[in-house]
Amino acid sequence: MPRLLLALLLSLPLGIAAQAAPPASAGQTPPAPGPKVLLHTSAGDVTLELYPDRAPKSVANFLQYVHEGFYDGTVFHRAIPGYLVQGGLYTRDLQPRRTHPAIASEADNGLSNLRGTVAVARGADPNSGTAQFFINLVDNRRLDYAGNQSGLTWGYAVFGKVVQGMDVIDKIAALPTRGQGPFAADVPNPLPVIESVRVIGEQAPAPAASTREPAATPKPAQRRSKARGA
Image (cartoon, rainbow, N blue to C red; front, side, top):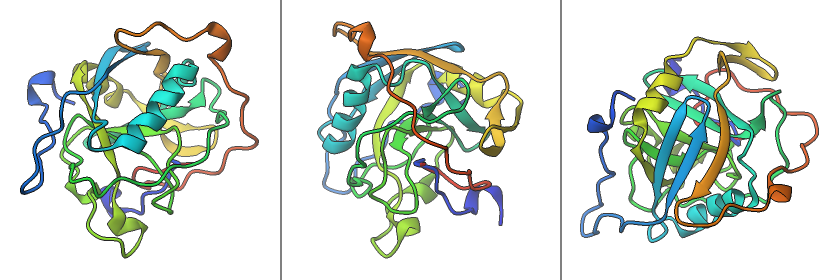
């Protein structure tokens, strides 16, 4: 199957001017401005705006990991030009960190996986998202909620968007890729490191909370799956 149509399962940019805010569904207002989060990466800084009014569980889950310092030292382990960039679980040596329990999917919140939006990565079960997230490089409407018939039709929950630094995400997407560690392909070389993640306006978490115990052996990646979760 074509790259963008393969089953999407990993538990789990062309300039800021090209970003588009996710449209509201009929009769709904656009997402209200929410907290902003700064991702300081080895490729540059990226600022996200979150949507707690439209994706409260997803935002609360993401912020819990941020406040714990979970993302510090993780990497963007997956980059597919014209599709997405994904990260938020694996360390520099591509070992997964131990996560909290999975959360219920909010993919049916009316938000679309448009360029620059941030969504929860997951496995075959729609309710299997944990720490991983992905950033859409293009309008990936095929990843939107289409019904509750299966994991494929359920889609992926958008919970925020890039408001600054989409050029950084584009730069990551343009890196050469290779197979490395548990992944057969699509691993950027060199690995872009998420050095720190902070809520803008909040005090940084204590250094002791900056890492979590690694999980056991990582699961093998499925080749060319969509927004997969471990």
